[in-house]
Structure formats: structure tokens, C-alpha cells
Length: 264
Image (cartoon, rainbow, N blue to C red):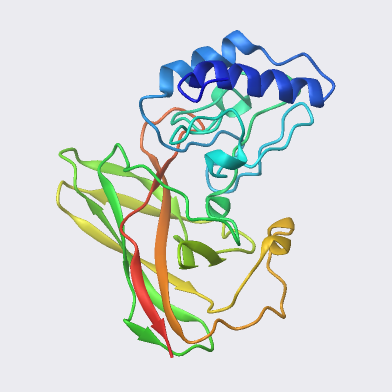
């Protein structure tokens, strides 16, 4: 399959997934129609029973890594989102529809940058929101490090909605994730109300420890992870928010520039 034929790649991906799961209930024309209508937005969205706490994708017995690089998702063109990652709601109970074998749910924002994997290339938010990391330039190598994430409306529209209680932080070394936010999700919301050009601060923190692929198999990381060695690390944030008046299940993931912090 040519890497320049993403629709054909999606068709083959879904057909193969249905075969491996032992079911032929996936409605290919319906799914492909939704993919075609949303390819232009190139953002990550989620559908499910909650916009603040969502589960990894599971439908008809299929599990996939939605945020892997194209080389790890055969048949998906480089730079194209994996099936189901286009912006907007995906059929499911919260979106007023149903998918074969159950609702389609995308990975939580904490899983956008899995441990040991290259940093995801998150497209600019269509809303114009940008999440900028504001942490000290240096910090001790032991113990949690606190700072803020500045959410700025760079667009021309007044934006209102809400986000979760914490931004998702990622620590990286040479472009590879060495730690990301994890653990139980706090079920509370922060109101977003930003005029064009306005900003707000969200409290954030990270632990200077190193995780690996094994930690992605559980909700919280192991308690005996090694400390990060002193040196410079990349620091980035993702803020997942829901605009007021958006369709059920719709969210937008907001990223920003990579910052640098030195652990001493």
C-alpha cells in the first residue's frame, strides 16, 4: 500500500484489525467517511463516557497504540494521524452512535508520549490555544519539581470551556520520553475563559525519575524507579480541553514549544 494513499491505508488497517479480532462487524464505509471528513484538522480527539477520564482504545477486542510513529503503525502514512485520531467526536454512546462491538475510546492525554518512545508531533490547536511551560531553569535532581503551564489564546475568538485539574507533563532526553504524568485522574475541572491575546496559568509538576515501557502497562508508575541523572532535559505540556457548546465527546489537545530544564 502506498504511503501516499492514507485512505487505502486506513481501509487495510481496519480490515486487518477486524480479521485479527475475529469479527467482521466494523463498518468500513462509515469509518472511512468520518476519517475523510476530519483529515484536514489533524488533531487528536476522544470519545467516551467522560471527557476528563478516558480509557485506551478498545473495540471489537482490538487494542492499538494510537500515538506510535508511522514506522510502528504499518500502512499509516508519515505525518497522518492513526485511525480514530482525527479531531471531533467518534461514534459511541457519548456521541449519539455506536461502534461495532462497543464504543471507540482513544487513549488519555497521559499516553500521548509513552515512556521510551519518541515525542509525539502534536499539531497546533485549531482554536489557537498554546500551552507554554514555565518552570525554573534549574532544579534539584531529587523530589518533585513544580511550575506552571501558561495557556494563551493566540486566536481571534473568545474561548470558553474547561480542562482537567492538571496539565499533562512530559520529560524527555534527546527526543525520547523518560517520564510523563501518570496515576489516578483527579475528577475536577478548571474553567477556561480567554479573550484573544489573554493567558491563564495552570499549576503543574513533574517527578525527576525515569520510566520505561513496563510502566505503560499500569495506571501508576512503579515506586522504585531510578532518579534522572543530572543534566539537561526537555519539558513539554499537553492541555486537553473541551470548548463550551462542543459536541459530546469532543476535546482538543493543546501543546506548545519544548522547554529545557537542567537537573542538578
